[in-house]
Structures are given as C-alpha cells and as structure tokens.
Image 1 (cartoon, rainbow, N blue to C red):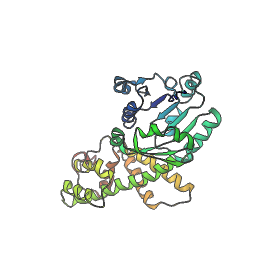
Image 2: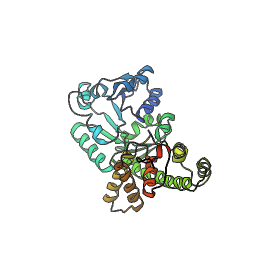
Image 3: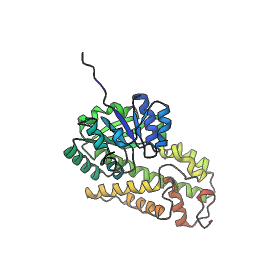
Image 4: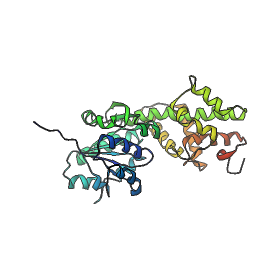
Length: 311
C-alpha cells in the first residue's frame, strides 16, 4: 500500500494577518515552519509547536505561503545564499508552490508567475485574502485563488484551514483581480461610513445609536461590524492602514485601465486616500479617512480625531 505524504509547509510573514493565519495552520499541520524578519514574532508560534526558520532558505518547503504587503517583498525572499531559491535547491525540492497571500497587482503577479515557472520551475498562486484580522483569527477568511488549476486544487485543503470561502477564480492574476474588486467595495464602504458618521456627529446625533441603526438595516456590512467602534471612539490607531488602502486602489486603477474601464467612484476614493497619506495619516487604520473628510469641512473635532492644530 502506498502512503501519501503531505508536502512540507511554511508561512513567511507574521504580521497582523500572517500571525493569526499561522496559528490556524498549526491545527492543520503541526510541522509548520514559520519565518519573519523580526524573529521575536515567531516565538508565540514556536511555543505552540511551530519551527522557526533562520532564513527564507531554511524555510524553503514544498508549499510556501507568503503574507507580505506587496510583491516586492515576496521577490526579495528569492535570491541569494539565504533565499528561497537556494533553499529549494539545497533540499532538492524541484517543483515547489509559492503562494502570494498579500494584495498585489493582478498584472504584476501574472508576469511574476510566468517568470518563476519558466526560469525556476516554481508554481506561483496568487491567493489574496479578505476578512481582516478577525477573520484570520477565527479562520473565516475569504480566499480568492488564481494560477494553475491543478496546483490550486492540490493546496485547497491548506486554504480551508484558514478560510470558509475558498474559490478558484482562473489563471494567474485572477485571484489578485478578485481582491481588487473586493477592495473597491471596502474602500468605498469605509469612506461612505466615515461621511455618514461625520454628518451624524456634526448634527449632534448619538453615534452609538446611529451605529446600531446602520447595523440593523440595509447599510450593514462586515466593515460596520468589525470597525464600527472606531467611528464612535475616534481611535484610528492600528488596523489595516490608509497607506495600504491607497496601494490597493492603485492596483484597481491599473487593472481598470488595462480593461479600458473608467471607475469614477474609485477615482474619488483614491483621491481622498491620497490626501490622507499626504497629510501624514497613512499609518492609521483606513477608517481614519474620516480625519481627511473633517479637514475638508474644517469642522471642530475632539480626541484622537483632532486636527494637528487642535481644531
């Protein structure tokens, strides 16, 4: 009887999304290898049984998941003595699968996948996720997969350890394009709720009651459920940053241009997030776009929402 063996598994990038995703994967594969540029971030996972790699080469496995902000960071893991390519060669892993979970350009990741397969025999899957840190912690992410269909099917069980909605979307770049569509809705929703809550605040309405009403009607969304308290407290620290939201909007514009589409709502939202970053608020959660909207109206604000000059 032939005993099938799982390919070795590693996750690289233990940030706000990668850390909890790795926790979910430990329940699936107790032999999980993890790596992060800041080694201390791996310590909680090591305590639970994961192996901490000393370099990307050391982490090289049959399936490598990357949870990094952009494609440049993924590419930086490949070359050199301590890179993934050297690691795969040293371990005689000839047909590895590299998964890009970050939000990246659909056009760039398709070109990246073609190049890695042609030059190095590496199969790349673009598999961005949606659901925020809460979805990562609870294993309820939505995962959109692009790339070779057979390869995608072979790792579907890994994705199911982290998400409840896993869908194959088509050839390389299709997962990233699906995430771009997702980000159109997310960025627009965050901006629309920010406008609504700013109007409510300025009109003297009880923001907690306003949030309850929005969540109880047609305006409800995961954005409101996960982030609603931010508009009440005006605490926009941490979370998915405005800088990353602007990056994603740039990919949307690039994809739309390639298809000959004009997306006017996305254009307006992109302009607003560009202002947010230019004003020095790029590190704040994307709900901090409310600060940019408030500046435009020159409204008096309080707490962490206050403008730099104290207004």
